[in-house]
Image (tube, rainbow, N blue to C red; front, top):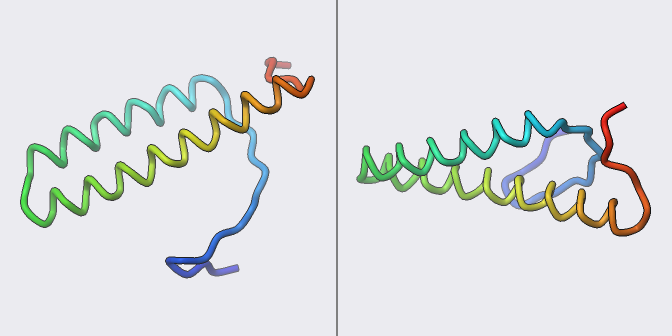
Length: 76
């Protein structure tokens, strides 16, 4: 399956807490890098960091909904 820039797909993934922490740290580093390099490369890096932020938010919302509806987010 190939997604175009405006396409979307729904998938189910399993992510651990440490993976989420790593993604959040990657986001922080990406935003800092964008500010440091500036120019059009900085703008592109900022856009990539914003996309990562959106993915993180979607995961956090999904995890909160799972918990609120009686699902489990516990390690097994």
